[in-house]
Length: 287
Image (cartoon, rainbow, N blue to C red):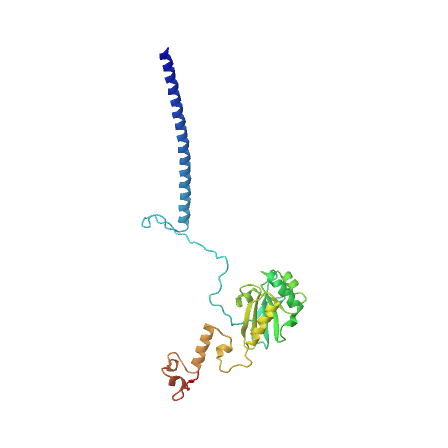
């Protein structure tokens, strides 16, 4: 009897051990499957990254191997248009384009016997709305010798009916011309350029968000205008040239005077070469 009981107890222990082993095997199998799925996902992600790098032209792998990756050009789209490297802030251009009603219009800015204030505005610009209204209501606030002209972008970029509605009741001409914005390198609206027609050059420009700021811009620019032309100024200055244009005009003026490249007068060695023999100006010791 005792032997039978011992055998039964041993059998039960053996069955329990088998169950524990089976359970352990099942758990390990599940863990291995999970790890396999995780590793497969990592490998797939790594492969996607490698393909993306190859498509961008990155040299992944051995650069000396025969199978070199074909580099693909990378197109970078800037978030905003780049500003010009050297902005021409002197030269002026006549205006031509269309009126809001569709008629052709051309306004001479250069050679005019007055100042011209060109207001670069837009019908959809929130900052321009108050300026439109102020110019319609009180154009007489500008000095009497200043002609006001509004320039919007062309009908391909602006709505002529909306521009006409903004300018309704105003006494100023409106020129719809995208080319004018390019000529004057306008960075954005509202932007104002004050042109001296007599000298054919810009004497003031800038951004203003209110009409009083525009009036202040005009008054400050007027104060900087010389009362009379300085005969000692170069022809390039009188023509309103700047940068390379001014340099080229000065070179032409020197050549007409018989002074060519390499002329000794361009490379003075002493005060006598500059002022003439015995004509060196006296030094002011009290300075």
